Image (cartoon, rainbow over all chains, first blue to last red):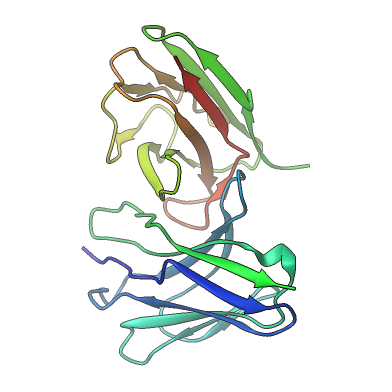
Length: 109
Length: 112
């Protein structure tokens, strides 16, 4: 089953780009990479997902390496409201989504 | 406005009582999910339903039960058999199974 590895926490200065890494070295060819975030005591919020190409939307960009073993979520201009736990998720072969502990991103004023 | 709602936000129960958590969505989504989150931990899947009148166990279904009689509703019952019921419970829905999931605000259950 595909699993993800993320650093437990990261800091980023307000206004700078936040780059959140995720390792998914056992990902299968037809599995997507999803990113969600959870602001304290709220439900998670969908950010972006991708298969093999880089993706961008109004919230973030997703960069997936050519071998698909890792990816990076980029928040181009981080604000204090981006302080949250960020989850990198892949779909496993049992059709269940596994949320790990994620990365706690601290935006520093 | 379309969305997913959970009620109540906070719920307190005595040990040994069953309690039902509400989840309603007006997004016309086929799939719905229940997750549990403990302090400092990620989400764990309890039950999910891909269509009406059908549901499957997730990773930690023991001590929980669900029903899916209507597309809009997916209530979760925490039974007295659940050994550690105190947690933050999150409901989600998606247009298709495992597509982008939209989460409700959660219900924080405390059992004493």
